[in-house]
Structures are given as structure tokens and as C-alpha cells.
Length: 364
Ligand SMILES: NC(=O)c1ccc[n+]([C@@H]2O[C@H](COP(=O)([O-])OP(=O)(O)OC[C@H]3O[C@@H](n4cnc5c(N)ncnc54)[C@H](OP(=O)(O)O)[C@@H]3O)[C@@H](O)[C@H]2O)c1
Image (tube, rainbow, N blue to C red; front, side, top):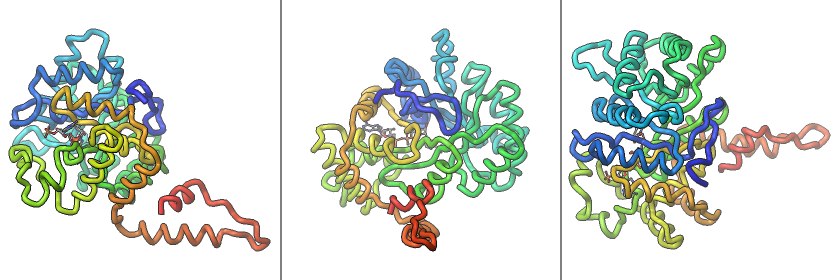
């Protein structure tokens, strides 16, 4: 596989690379990210390898990430239309202004205008609602986004970090109103955070949404920098500046971290490649959001595309990281097993499981 093995994003015609470049690390005003020059080198390396999908947000380094991308695009004629550029709205960048953020109509339009100015473009391909707002009526947000599609300022709509019930409601409202659909989700997903398998990922599969997992290395915990031997009990090997930002692995995370490191050693690849290849290969995943602070990290991460793990390695990783999901996951899994036995007609002809039920039964 390579960055040019483009896949369609959910039930849409938009083609994206199997890894999307995350740019939360762009801009170093918070003390640990990449400065403008290194950020542009990362962009060049990703695009040079055939990548076409870039993810940012208005909040990343308070707009600096978008500004760095905008500068890069304006210096590369013709590039803008070839890439899939996504940004997000929600977080308030205007201190003291109650309409400076959030998904209301006034705030959404203003946030987009600000992002377009920083990105030096007149449209974004994917416009993501960055978080859940229990106050604003979903119809207001969806109608605003649909208007922005009609106005040619955004091409597609995505939801990030919104509960499954609220996303499903939004998708249903949009479908029956004929408004722009929610074509994709962003959610935290890695070997150390699999609880989206309970509701969000099955919802995405059922409703035709692409899934972009974020923090696939759990902010670097799965990159090989951690192990029970070096950073475990006394945490002596932990980079304390970075730990102040992202915390440190919990004691129970080390079973997963050590297994990733062991498999990487067996396969003679990096731990990051193992963790990223696992994430990208999971059911329902469209394009994994890779984060890199330096070009060498990006190159290590892109090498994950060359890795095809065998069933045994995948099974070991699945098992050691198996999540405890919220109700009704276990209850439904038990019922789907029953359906397999009980799904016969009176004359004994087995009734095949629906593909959805069969997929969920196979998971347990
Ligand atoms: N929608 C959302 O709410 C949301 C939330 C978070 C992120 N995102 C998106 O997802 C993208 C990825 O998230 P993330 O940055 O948290 O991903 P991540 O891959 O889990 O963590 C990235 C960090 O891991 C370390 N790292 C990455 N590759 C490495 C390598 N090969 N070797 C050693 N260390 C490595 C670096 O940390 P050091 O700085 O310590 O070197 C880097 O900053 C973001 O850029 C953003 O676009 C979205």
C-alpha cells in the first residue's frame, strides 16, 4: 500500500490517502511543536510521497497551524486544488466573545471566514464540527453547513468527537431534509483507546461514514519511546516536558506497549509502524491521522504502509488491547450468538444473518 492507494471517504466520491497528515504539531508557540520551516518540510515530504489529505483546525496553535499551511499553499501554484484540505470549527479564538466559537450559525460562518483567510484559499474540502455542543439545535448547524456547501465554501461535512446518538440524529435529519450529509468521523482510536468500537465505528459502518482515527500512537506512547523496562515503574526515562503536555502511560498500558515493541522487533520494523498498520487495518477505518513533529518521525510513520501484518500478530494485538465496551455491547453480542442458533424457520431452513449482524457476531 502507498499514499496513492486512495480510498473513498465514506459514502462520498471524495478520494483520500490511507494516511491523512495531521498538523496539530505545526507551530511551536506552545513549546514543543515544529516551527514553520520544519512544518513545511513535513508537508513537502508527505505530499512528495503522494499524500493528498491534510487535516488542521482553527484551534491548533491558535491558528498558526492553518497559517503555516496557507503560506505553503500560496507558494505552490496549482497545489491547492489537488489536495483534500480539512479544518475544524468549534473552539473559541475570540476571548470574551460568546459567539466567537461553537456551532451556531453566526459563529460557524465567522470561524470559516477566519480559517479561509489563514489558509489563503476560498474553500475547504472537509469542514469538521470539532466537538459536541449540547445547546445549539442540530438543525441550525446542519442548515448552516449545507448553505456553506451551496455557497462553494466547503465541499463536505464531518463530525469529530460527537456522541454516536447525536451524530446519528444529525445524519438522519440531514438525510430527510436533503442537506449535505455527514460523510466522515474523527475519533480517538489506537491500541490504547478502542472504546469507539462500541458505538461510533459500528454507526459509521452502518450509515456510510468514513472514519479518521486520531492519536493512533496515543500521543507517542506506542512509538517505541516507552516500555515497561525503560519508562515503566519509576518513569525515569520519560521526557518530562512532553509528559507535561500528554501525561504518561498508565501501569495497565504497558502490556499493550510491550507487545507492540516485541512484535516490532520480531518483524524488524518500528513500533510506530506496528501500531499504525494495526489501526489502519481495523474494520471501518478509512484514513489514519498521522502526527509527526519531525520529518524523520513522518518517514518512520509512512513506512507503516509497507507493513502487512500476519493474522497471528494481529490476533495478539487484538487480544492484549481488547476493550471493555459500554452496555449494550456485550448484551447485543450475546443476542447475536443466539440469533445464529435460533435463526431457523419452522421447516429447519437456516436464516442467514444480515451482513451487519454477522459482522458484529464475528467480533466476539
Ligand atoms: N479531532 C480531534 O479532536 C483530534 C484530536 C487530536 C488529534 N487530531 C488530529 O490527529 C492528528 C494526529 O494526532 P496525534 O498528533 O495525537 O497523533 P499521535 O501519532 O498519537 O501522536 C503524535 C506524537 O507522537 C510522537 N511521534 C509520532 N511519530 C513518532 C515516531 N515515529 N517516533 C517517535 N515519536 C513519534 C510525537 O511526539 P513528540 O512530540 O513527543 O516527539 C508526535 O507529536 C493530529 O495532528 C490532528 O490532526 C484530531
